[in-house]
Structures are given as structure tokens and as C-alpha cells.
Image (cartoon, rainbow, N blue to C red; front, side, top):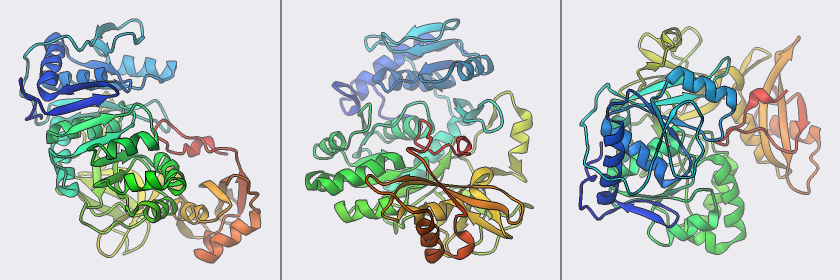
Length: 466
């Protein structure tokens, strides 16, 4: 998994604030963790944005022990479910961090050193990541070493990612994006990661002017960045120095993509993935970066877009994404029924809906359950309407849902957060969509909010609307 993780290697590996470890130092402290958990069946990590979290995960991977990252802000009921479902032998956490009672605690200290490395790979589980439940409690996605290694290597090919790259980000470390891509990814490449703890445009700019080359973020962060670089030419210049700005975890509005490009000269690289599959598609570093497109499939991954019966849809039509390849998870922990239901003829049914450009670039429309609206005999993607609404100068944030309608089947509802100091008119927004798209895609109702409900990754939780 980590070729540079050897004693005496003085290449920079991790930096969190003022605390940093070289690969040699990380090998020692992660080896100390591995030696203490080597006989465990599973371990959990209380995944605060800290260097101890990164060390704990690295140690678990060295020991060949599956690791369960837990969001430290998790609610009591969800935490109880995760612990009872996964049954970790210990919870690892940094000094001074409170952890749940009832499970043995292993405090991770940077002074614990040992030499320990089990060469585990293939189908052996590496992570159990709990993914948000839509109709029930979260499911534990069991990801093998095979999926982690093959997918990180495919991303390295797509992004021209090497040991010379220095990644900077402020993503949470309990999810695929921040932890597997943002911590394990740089360590597999032999490069360095600098974690900021929380998103701040000026802090990232400072890293980009002192050696950082890549930035990972989510659309909420890039939305804030767009406003910051428009206001501050020095910030814009710093971000213009980046080799790669990558956005994921949700669709990046085309308006933010274009604002950042105007201010910095940078075009954002978008990618598409999920807990069960890791990354399926990505724009290449050397490829065309189109707003709203997540690029073609990464190497080794097959993607198809199908109708409800599993037949491929015509070019440009909306359908569900199905995926197969070495990037796929093994199973949902303790849920053989859900695992079987998630596959069709060997293809994983993502529940995401999309269209494809003629050259294979995929455009995500949204989730089948919440973002595919069937209105007046048409299949309509919520994401397309949201992007158009965000082009309106009176709109700061937008979400689109469908609700039952006796005549249309479903009517389109727009949820709008007005831009500061603006008072948008409902009919003006409806006409704006009808003019730029087609009349049948116009919202029938517009509702105004102070803020859209979002989860920890910045995704809008549409089930909270209504």
C-alpha cells in the first residue's frame, strides 16, 4: 500500500497545523499502532481532523485490520447502530478526545514506535465506511485493499498525480473523499498532504504559495472560494498557481466553475464516486474541463447508463448509472439482502441518474430517489434546473425537488436562498428556467428559505425539504 513508509525516510508525509511527520517518523508511529492492534478483528477510529486520525488509519492498514472511521459529531442513535453493527474491538483516538463508553479505547500518541507491517492486499477488508441511510439506518460498506489500491492508481493516472505533488485540503476524515483520497492517496503516491482542519481560502492560498500543488474540496467550499477570489486579486493569483483543483462529493454548479475560472484562470477538475465504488469517473488533468461534467470512466472501471429495466438509454437521455470493475466494495456488512439488491447482472446499481455526452463525458443529474422528476410524461433531472437557477443574479443557493401532482404526476418545486440584498420574484425565476431550458422544465412552485439543509459533506439533504 505504501512504498515510501520505511524507517529513515525523511520525505515529508503528513502535516496538520504545526505538527508534521516524515515517512520515516510515520513508519515508526504507525508501526506502534499496528503492533498494538495486530490481534484485533476490527478497529474504529474517532475520526477528528487530526494527525492522530491519519496515524491510526495508517497503522490499521499496516496491521491488516479493517478500520471503521466514525464521524465525531455522529448522533447517539446512529453511533449506537454503528457500534452494534460493526462491533469494533477498540476505538482509537488522539489524546484529550472523548470516545463512547463501552468500547475499549486505544489512545494514539506520536511517541509510540515499533516496526510492524503485514503485507495484506487483495480481497482482505481495509475499511468499513458507513454510508447515509435513506430508508433505514446507515449501511457498512466493506472496501477491500484491492478496491483502494486499484482506484488510487487509476486516479494517479487520470490526474498525473506523483510523489512530487503536495495536496492541501480541509475535508472531514470519516469519509471516502477526505480520508481515502485525501490521506491514503498522497501516502500511496509517496507525496505529502497538508490538512488545515477547517476550510479557509486564505490558508489554502498560503499553502499554494509555499509548495502545495493540489487542492481537494467540495462544492460548498468552492462556492465560498468563488466569492473570495472575486474580492481579492492576491487570493486569485495564489489559486492560479495550483496544478490541480479537484471538486467532488456533489455536483459543482456551473456558475461557480465559471466564476473561479474568470478570477484565477483555473478550470476545476470534477470527479464522481460514492462509498461503494470509490471513484468511477473523472476529468483528466490534460482533458477538457467542462462545467457540469465529471468526465469519462477512470481506467479499469466500466460505466453504463440504463433505463428502469436495465436496457441502455439512447444518447443524451437520462438513466441510472451502473458500474462494474475492481473499484467495487465487497458487501454491506451484515446485510446480504441489501448487497444482492444492489447488483444487476454483476453491475452495481448506483441510484444516481445521469446523461452522457457523445464523447463519453458523464453529466450527473442527481439521485434516482430525489432528483429524477417525472412530470407531464417527461423525465427531468433536478440538477440541470438547479444550475440554471444559480445563473440568476438574485439566487445564492437552489435546490429542486418533485412533489405529487394529480395532473402532471409530479410538479417541479424550486427551493431558493436569495442572494444578499436581493428579493427575487417567483414568476421571474420560473420564466428564467423556461427561457433557458424548455417550458416543461420550469418550476411550478418556488419556495424561499434562509438556508438549504446540508450534511457534513456539504450535500443538500433534500429529504429535509417539504
